[in-house]
Image (tube, rainbow, N blue to C red; front, side, top):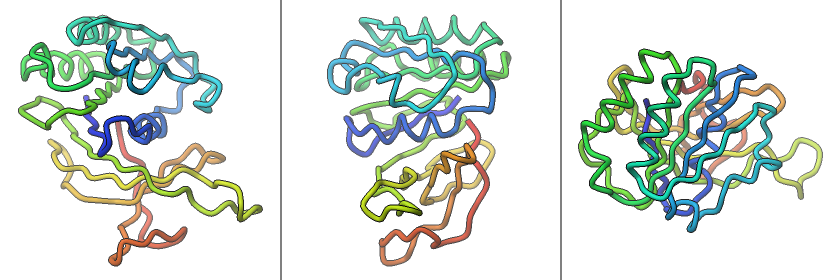
Length: 202
């Protein structure tokens, strides 16, 4: 189970990073949003997501309903991933709730992502915790005026299994592969800067 915190609450980059981490399976994705997340950022635009996996959308009124739906989804091993979006710091989203999600995800071996919008990174049982900032897309190989592959600056600020760090993540659509590269010292982003790393695991 991983948590992801967008630098700007309404930034779609966090969802893009999650989608770039989907396992290479054709099984469905369960996507659950609470009312405020859906109101402020909109429902997932399925034609623009760029995945052929079926997506099961669930609209929940409260954070506690999101957590319940995610837990129930994690009982189903035929899903590719379970994604939840929760706005703010609701009382229901405490350490116990995140621990239940983490244990269910590990028992089912189904990746679970919780997108925390307008939230503070307080106590959590999430195995990995990320901060994500959208960056300009990579240059297009054939048209300099067209957007290329999407990029983000990602920070793994807490993890149970890996050392923390900061990278520039680039998603190669054609290869369905996520590359992590060390950020450039002066803050500029170039297409081939840094050393490519391995795909981030969900």
